Image 1 (spheres, rainbow, N blue to C red):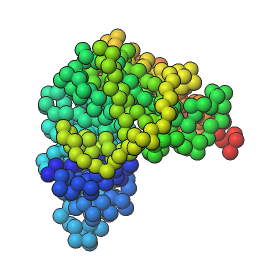
Image 2 (cartoon, rainbow, N blue to C red):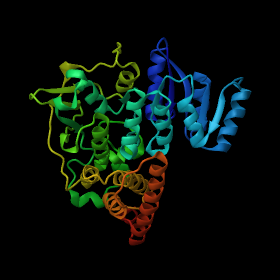
Image 3 (cartoon, one colour):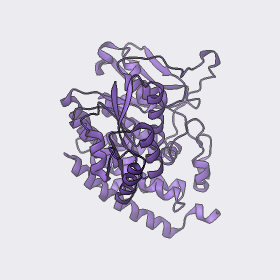
Image 4 (cartoon, helix red, strand yellow):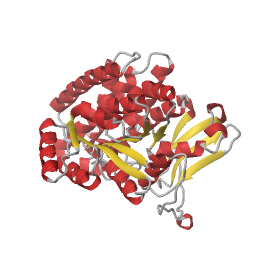
Length: 406
């Protein structure tokens, strides 16, 4: 029986993880949950799963949850709050496996502490590896525990690498191919980007995801983050990670080996499958998540338009600083500015085309440098967010094209 902690239990990945647990009650048990701000769903999950610990972001909400659980006859469930509470959930002694699914850097400290505590970690939070990948992967190697990707693309790469010697040694791998659907604006002229609405940007053609990751998919920043994540997770240089647009999203990723062989992974577009893979690795267990090969559609591929989607180029640029030995800070600024800019777009404060401009200006204003602790990472993240918010205010003063047409 594998005992699981879920960081972000009320989000899309968290709920999908609980669905997997429900399908395999003989294999998995929910040990702890971190539920963020959704107190109502946290209560429902606590009643259903009876974890040892539940964490909420807000102290008042945590206190209210504790009272509700006591009245429901579940007073034995420990209720904690804030960043320390999330760390408690991730490092609880009864936990065997941690699913890291909190969006953004909010889950960074808990994820790192889970690795330090010797837990196996399934990563659905790509920001952890974007801003502190070197620290996390070094600690995982030190602990001798795997970092198992839950993102569909990296999960696919992980599966393909199993086809190589020693699970795909770096000297066997010629190139990693990360596929991108292209998002809702693949065929939209760049001249129309200034008038893109929030509703249009949230209409992803393939996946159902949270709002930030959906916008990141529309700008291709999500794919930029995945390039950074792949470099750190699989220990390859940026020039060996290639993005290719594949609108059908049938193939999730491919690995090209030095002899010219290419292995591709394809499956249903259902996050329960990569979650199940991570939870049961190195086993493979039967499931009903089937892809009908007989119904396979035509497969299209094309290179990404870097001029139309500059966020992808900004991600490669941040990695170039690391290759020159002066990196770390730039990828932190990249992620922080993106989170601020996407939030501003969702609130209709800035236009869709202004997201990459704010990110680029924040990166330019952030000095290059290495970060040697999670505390340093979080400090720089705060500084980059302040920079990005000031730039959002400047763009707001110029007038948002979204507000102009609404």
